[in-house]
Length: 160
Image 1 (cartoon, helix red, strand yellow):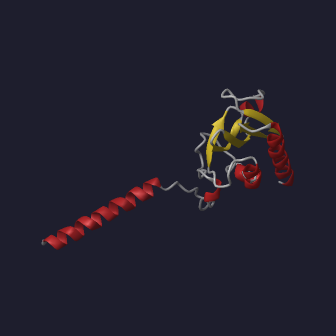
Image 2: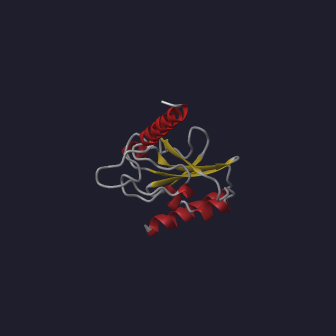
Image 3: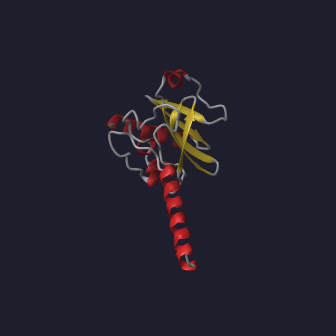
């Protein structure tokens, strides 16, 4: 076997290894169809089971990014380009957007332990406003801005 043949064989093996790694990293798909489309504008992609229990997607609920509108977050001083992180907190599961000292998050109160949480502030001092079955979490925002976000959440949850 010549040098060129060995190089081709080595390249083919490297390509096969990369393909195998790519397949291993791909999220598993349920037997009943392909995974839902991931919209990058929402930030961290939600993957089934990533919260350790069924989240909003498994329960057929709207993504928190659709309930706490980007325009409302933008008006609150959290730029529309801010990507979210998916979080599980004692008061719910959802998304949080952080820009400097300011943050806003929307968390679904999905389970009994979430609904049993009654404090108006998280352990780290974030303010919590319960709006029906969701919690609006804020930090570094004035009362008027928080009220505007809560109003946007009320409108979005009333429409769904």
